[in-house]
Image (cartoon, rainbow, N blue to C red; front, side):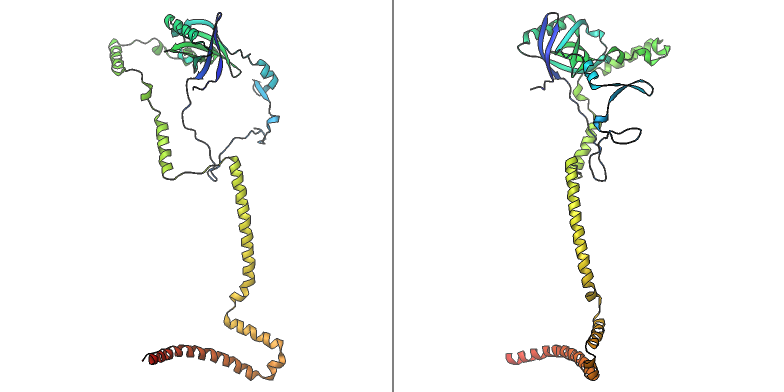
Length: 337
């Protein structure tokens, strides 16, 4: 089903044709969104005071019309609303003119008019009448609280309505200020004849499908290629961005806590890890001497001998261990024999 944006009637004289308005065009193209390359967040617009640069809340914004340079007349929302034309839901045809008299410069936006509420017969009547007379209807219509000038014309088996630009919106040819050589040329007949033949050679039937937007095609091919290569950037909305940033804060806090806990435990364990065995023995000896001077004074020689015994016992133990391996192997070999 076509998307209807407006319902009303085409009116001329005492005739009313129930119709629905359907857009005749669709917007195509590539939307290049602005992204912050540091975080890949979307970039938006802010309402600011252009003098101070400060943000402005919507309730502090009024509408004004510049009457002269630097001087504005403020218009309230109620005053603007009261100036809006009354929406009559009618395409009111006020005149019929020759179709060839309307320059395409005036054509603004095209719409289809489709018959509505059992208005098919009178719809077809208007279409055939315009087709056979070569006329089009000039009409007034209000769409979305805005008044438009429009033209109603036949297109195949349908009626179309094109909104028109107002006269003061279209510039005349005199605006170009062309020289007389372009306005009243003295053309060579041979050159004119050659130009006509070239036009005839290049003439063909109108086929809009054969003309493509090459820029759009190249950009979309590039997008598809990069997407297949995995070159995609995750972009979230404002709420998602806030959630993600809050999650990052929580993770960072937890990491900082863990880091601090690790440092404190490392500080406590650092003296035991950094002291060498020789240093620990030397540090242990004064501790023993301070705890019991009498024990140290009774016998220094036994202390030395004890230390020497412990050192010799370590070496002897190591030697016995190394020596016991071949001995064990010998005894095992004897048992086996």
